[in-house]
Length: 115
Image (cartoon, rainbow, N blue to C red):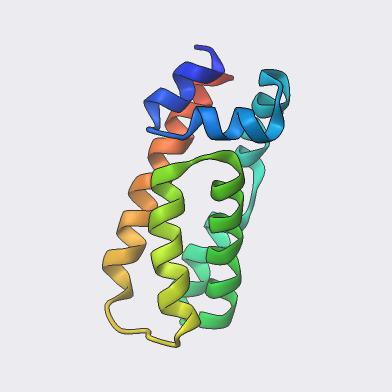
């Protein structure tokens, strides 16, 4: 699988990330580094333990990475969760977290096929 096919598989913004990072090799390098980012696990653990400030930071980090790398679906779901946490609205976080988990798995699946 090439990088463009990876982005198609995850419904990502290939054109946007190429316009920012210019070279496919550079995009691939950062996309593969996403597999090692601890923010997702930190988000899940923090929410499980009701550590909302830590969950906010993790969600915000995921959102930023996804915006920069063009992981569109995960960006939108993590953004929604980030804003809810920013506003200290802790009701019904489970549904938002499930959407983040679903989108995260889509990205991970696509990226692992790129490897």
